[in-house]
Length: 148
Image (tube, rainbow, N blue to C red; front, side):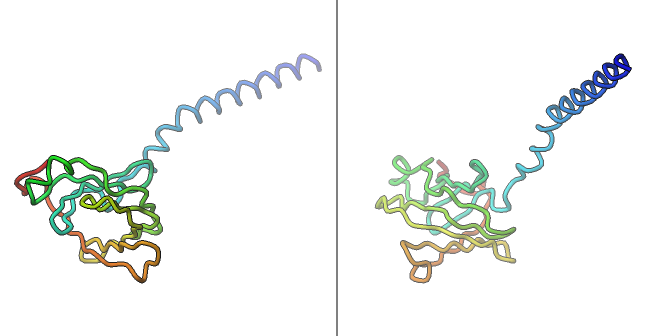
């Protein structure tokens, strides 16, 4: 009977080890699916700026990739001005910040992807209701001259 228990214990231990090994090997494959691109990833125009929106640690960030005014390019090109924008639904993001690259003021930011493909950004200091709304339009960066 003692040999039977040892054999059973060894089989259970082997099965446990095999299951753990499979789980460890499968983990990276499972996490790839969760790193899907955000629907707002890409290049957007807001007034005279082109912004590249991208995933940064499961949040949305944005950096300047085009500026209409060539005099502002040396100091502002490549500058990260959007960070911390977290998904609040399939087409809504909240809790972000946006930096005004001209005066250095930081504002709060929320955004909503509209059915027509435009991105509606709400920019505010403290109270969302007292803020302003800006519309971003998706664009092909290759179509812009004077890129950063």
